[in-house]
Length: 288
Image (tube, rainbow, N blue to C red; front, top):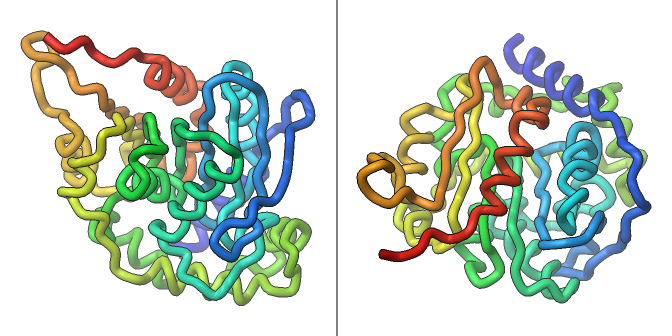
């Protein structure tokens, strides 16, 4: 029952986006690591890469984010392996592999460095980009993702294990995937592939996260499925837990939104985007 409620909320989120008027984007497919990765470029200015969550594409609430962020930035929205218009291949959909794909995409687009905003699966990919390709990452906004499997609460891990293909049968998620994907008859294979990868144990490494140079903005809901002590751990690793009136404040940031779940975070755009813009626009602290 809990898994069905989660999927129902996910469907509501994906369908609630309103496509706002904007100029036609530049679109294309980048040949990266055996993929033909679909991407869209909206607006102009400093580049920011948008990385969607599992079972998502450049749709729903993400469209609203694109419209808002592209008012002042060059937004590169992508559809990662198996998602949207990017066909799946025989390779784990691990955050490491997906991060390497995004790095190659930036090479293809001749963008030397960018900011990254990721949600859920995409947030893990954004953090892995900072770990594995630090020269390409200026700042990271991580929305609701842990750095280890045990960072999720038990109910979250249980829901993932219990997630079944039947829940998606006849839903708009399945219908949209079939409409967009180059292999429209392959939804069951895509589901099984994504779930199998997602169930594997993972750990980005606390030491590796701490060593990253890019400032990070961790954004969570107070009931988003990531353990609160794990959220605090990630923020501490990036320089948190200090008295900012007494000593220099970390360039990394933390926000926990009240009465907000993993799914409803994406509907908090009017609250989150101004905070994200402030973070991305902030100048480096002057060294004493």
